[in-house]
Image (cartoon, rainbow, N blue to C red; front, side, top):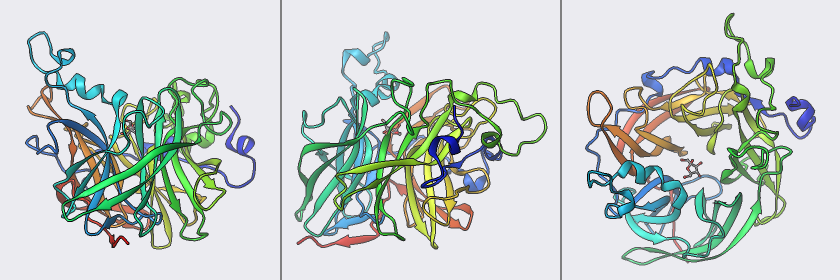
Length: 424
Ligand code: FRU
């Protein structure tokens, strides 16, 4: 594979590299970057549905926004099947683990509302059956556009393929609740190009998803982050000096790490409305380090760009590892260079005693971090687990220069608004 310079040229920017040396600094169970233990007696949002990725309604500047005093979140959602013979095991019991693990194939976008920023009430599906062009409605971002309540929902239409799409609708409130109207016409925006971003033809395990549109606080233009892999046939990537970084003697062997090729992608809108997009080279690559940098998002603070992305233990390359959780990078300008927060990138990981307790963290500009509960052990050995499919306790972090610190824990699914919009 060509180096970043050969591949992307000199303009408009060089991707920053998350190196193997950076990742060697990742330490699980550092209390300043570890999520407090989630107790196995957590409440569930719903006995009818599982929820996972949570997408708070926000504006293009990143502010979490309520409307007429109602907080709104969107979630990836799938029915629970406690009575479906397909999920009953040989002892006649509901195999919730299998049901949960199958959820990605039937993910749909739902919305919830609340007066308190927690205790969410189910609103329903955002799009009627048949509106979205593919089987799976995967993660993205709902954007409140104006005081009329217009909402652009950017998301990923998956299987067949993976296309970044958007659908426009409107949020309507009453004294009693919130509804979503419209959301009837899905517009495809773009898919991986095979030159900067890996395609399915190049790698059946490719990732291309999770749009996060935003207005750059400095140039005022509309951009979008997304998850990708660096283009090229699977196995063709080179893990060279740049990708390895400054490692101690004995750490030069990269094993099979050429198969891990995650990147954080960026696109710029050619128009005001965000209907016409041009993909740019990735902001950050993790070739030889990790295969997934999911749900990338920004916090703009102190004149800096704090770039966050979620990743897993199982997607790390040979010779490097870290907990499931959220990782972060900081730069003085949008196109970098980005340096890993806390030296390693790790911002909030699961404790090693409960490695799957939470995932899909979203760092909000007020320092609150929301995530969902995946599974929590119910015995000492960790062989018995309780499946979540519900909101995790919110964690508070403090972001200071190139460091972050866990400083607080809040209630389950606590996502308070940063501003309220009175609809006209
Ligand atoms: C993160 C994620 C997203 C994807 C969705 C699929 O938890 O993997 O990247 O959109 O879940 O269910």
